[in-house]
Amino acid sequence: MVYREAFTVQTTDRGVSFHDVTEHVRKIVSASQVRDGIAVVGSQYTTCAVITQECAFDMSMTGLETLQQDLVNVFEKWIPTCRYEGMYLYPGDKALAHAREQGEDAFSCYNADAYLRSSIIGRSETIILENGEMDLGDFGRIHFIDWDQTGSHERTIQVTIIGE
Image 1 (cartoon, rainbow, N blue to C red):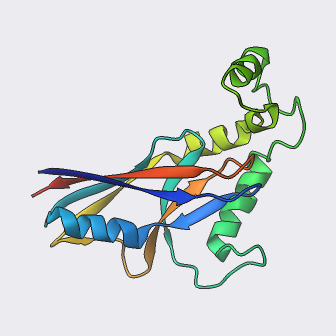
Image 2: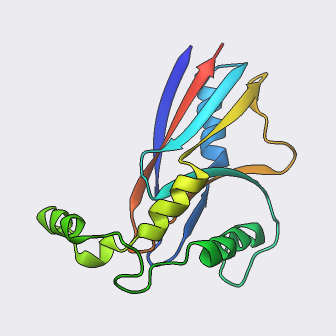
């Protein structure tokens, strides 16, 4: 059996946006009535990622859980946030021209860091289902990450349940 459903989140402006989507996915798994199989949680956006991560319990001064902030800090050292024109090769002249044709402002194109981070982490996560429950361990959570810091966005998260 295959069951599909989607939902949306609103991401924040000018910062990496984390969304705990565990309970949304749990409700979709329940609605699917699949007992054993897999749940694939994915993003169609190439500047976003889906991860499973331990609940850190503690919060950083930025409002993120401490493990989330640690992940942002690691990526900031490895793939720094684009802060000025020319920091990355992308966007080039053709990409900027295309954006203008689509009615986008140039600032929204300076998100090469988001594309690179997402390509490393991946845009989906697969969770094993056993007896109708997600196998996330004792403290595992599913997080949707929008790495694009050029503006806020409404993002759709897709969930596909496969099993019996």
